[in-house]
Image 1 (cartoon, one colour):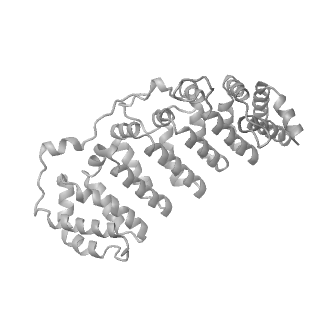
Image 2 (cartoon, helix red, strand yellow):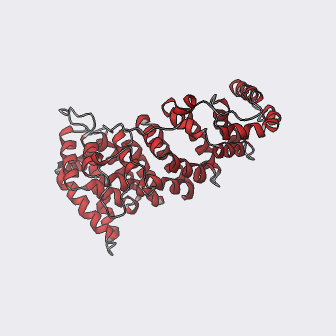
Image 3 (cartoon, helix red, strand yellow):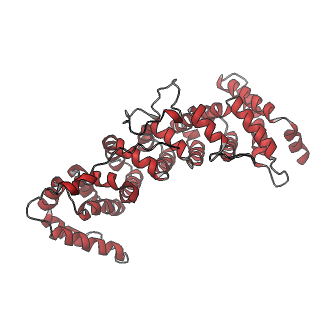
Length: 385
């Protein structure tokens, strides 16, 4: 068997890359010989995977991988693979996922760049690769392999920047890293905004994977995302609250409320949190979650609700809602999820909120200007490295 593997390794990487690209073109043409093309393509991708991953018997050769990476970029193969993933046979999709993951992190021994060369090439020259990988969520066949590749790429903040700031239409070039303008509000038509649809309307597996990637985008690179949320505050949270927090899917609803709590309670998002908890409408939504039929939705909703109550500089709108509902809240909270007797922190937090509600004034008090000033998000114009 090793003899056959060695025969595959004897081919120059550039020949394998060109062969794969040719087979992809034929496969996209959906010719009568598609089955034969699929078989040949699967063999070529298997050979490519062998070069980047090796086996127990065959060690990876950095020189071979370097040559393969150069040929892959020269032939624009990553883009062709990204947009073709959904039509590949199952094993070929798995091999492609492995190939992408290895190539994205590969760094030649003499490289002194912070990011791997493929990452730098993508964000400066071919960001369409990332856009096509995101579009993999439009097909159930490619959702999970594309998601796995994206999360590997999202280890680098420059990839997150491309996803967040691209607003290209179909057929248009995607945004290059040098074109990113953090302080300019988004239109809501870019690739990032499609995640709301994929999460809320996809099949269970597709939705779950899309949410995992969505969460990675919003939580991994804090300084980048804080600026993005500040600049696009109203548009983002309008979508987040209406599409995800109020989703008909229990899983989507619960995960989204939990993610909302993580975003608001992250110290890096202080200004974003303060802006969110100024809104009376946001408070009404959280109070509605407390009355949900499902206990875990109630529990996750509580962790958002407590931010409104614990805020020492509550807006007039928030104060008015809490004051108007003071008596009901004081009766409701002590009995709220009272079966969580082993959760001392939750019990303490409930007691704290009860005390804060008891201390509310009879009428709303306009907070001082100095207390309000940091509560509105400022534009973070920090450039992406």
